[in-house]
Amino acid sequence: MWTCAVPIGIIFSRYFKWWGPWYLIIHFLLMAATIGLTMWSASKRYQDEEAILPMDDQDNQAHMVIGLIILSLVVGEGVLGLAAFFSKIFSKQLLPISYARKLHQVVGWGLLISALVNNKFGWELYDDSQNKTYIGFMFAVIGPILLFEFRHQISPYWRFLSFYFRRNKQLSHIEAIEKISKEDREYVFLEELVLDITWFKYDHPGGYNMLKNVIGEDVGKYMIGCSSQKNYNPYTHTIQALEMAGHLSIATIPYPKNFLISTNKSNQNLMTWKIIEKNQINENHFIITMTSDEFEMNENWEKAEWLGKHFKLMMPLSFSNVFDKRKNISRYYSCFFVNLDKWRQEILAEGYEVSEPINKEKKGLKFIFKVYPLGVVSNYLNNLLINDTILLKGPLGPGLGIDNLSGSFLAVAGGTGLIPFLDLVRYLWVNRENPHEFKLMLYVSFGSRKDAFAIDLLKATEQVIDENIFKLILIFTSEKGNQNIPEIMVKLGKNNPKRAWICGPSGFNRFVEANLLESGLDRKRIVIM
Image (cartoon, rainbow, N blue to C red; front, side, top):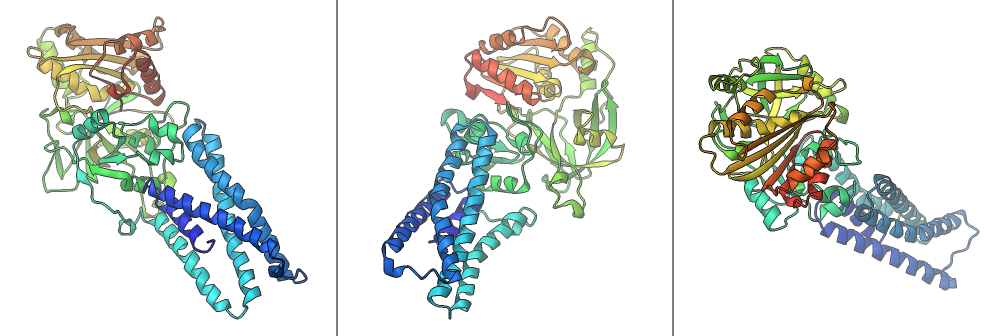
């Protein structure tokens, strides 16, 4: 059992974790059988006095001592395995989960190595003429584990070593969201993939409670370490974790048609865009405009399914840094269609006052970003000059997850979290004479007035449009009189919107979510972007 069943159980548990629940069943049955047979064999051996070898030989003594150690630890290893599994389900603290997992792994590997060494002693004691056969047998046992570990470590870098047992079908984000809300499917989004975490959530290294709260979300922000859940620090997942997500995928969301217009049928998985304009909006925020030789940005707002999607910005890596996980840095940036300067001109034509234009906005792809003092990617962006290039993938994610603009919606934005909603407000402005039964309540929070952007456009739009169609709530958290924010959130939730989008920093998102849930709003209607 130790030379066959245990290695197979380890292989399934470590390298087929995505094959739920079968990998767990196979691991449990093989390990339980090994523990049971080990205890039965030991008790049988010690009951049979004639089978006990003489203890005057050092090899006999070593064989006996190692056997006793294995016997004393094997039951504890089973208990540790159960503790590791159930701690993931019931514990909300990472420390006990981590300790249980690591201890189970260390003791398990130690038992396997001890058992293989003890098998060698036993083999020699009973038949010392078969050493070459034993060595070949050991290679047959250890070889598959080493090969799987080798593939596990390098397959993310050489895709031909990565294997998938099924081909993904294409699924629109609308269809995926309907399956989540109407069929209770436990799906999450990761860039262009739809992942089924029905079984994986029970064996997620961070615990069941971490995944049960993200059903229906785009989890890319957690995977790359730019966001976190309440009471948890951001964590950048390894490239192996990203590869395993491919095994969990059940569908691929195709890139939206006519969002980017390809000039030579180039691949959107890795695009090069050149910065042609860069302007400072306020003290900490900048807007850049980019063009590409391979793609053009569609300047015409056409479909609701385009709204709220984002691009993945990847910092360039030299070959020498490929295996350095700390250098594998990327971030997501929301895209938007609205030409802010054109919008400003239209508002001025209506007789309303607005500030000076942010920029003249040349045609191209636009990002608004905030520069953080210790932000690696934001400072990388800020240090780029005109004609410098950046690497992008996208557009990605489910976006706002709507295919038409009808119904009542709530959007709660913190800081740059406003960006995905600018196009929604722009839509209301353009269609202010014929709103098509669309209503938007927009709550925007900035730390201070010096951090704010586009608020003059939002205020002017609110003045023009009926408050039953568009309502703006603007908060500056550094100013006095904002202590009733939780009450405002609860009140907004009681309006029972068709969908409530939340976009902002991690703590802001979970704070808003908690207050909306307190209002009685169904969790399935809340989308954390």
